[in-house]
Length: 106
Image 1 (cartoon, rainbow, N blue to C red):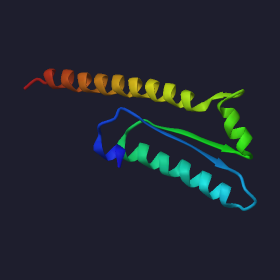
Image 2 (spheres, rainbow, N blue to C red; image 1 turned 120 degrees about the horizontal axis):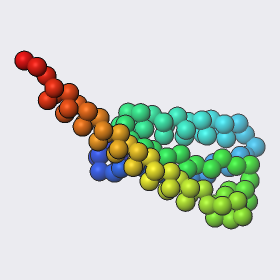
Image 3 (cartoon, one colour; image 1 turned 30 degrees about the horizontal axis):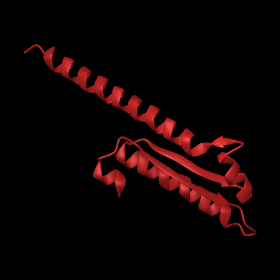
């Protein structure tokens, strides 16, 4: 829904999938990654995968601002970098197309 509005330069998906005693962990993790990728491809928009996949809640906490850094912040930086890159690519593409249009000999 956010991507469809085309108001954002990037979308950041944050969350945590913590392994339990059933195989659902693999299914949920794979489908989250697939869904995020689908949105990025469908809308040509940077969509950052900031979903932690861990074995324990403690591991998730350590990656979400604990001793292993802050993966949410890393996702924000990635979104900013990708948004800037996409903007530059679109700008250069538009500029190149305009130059091709002025070079036509008729």
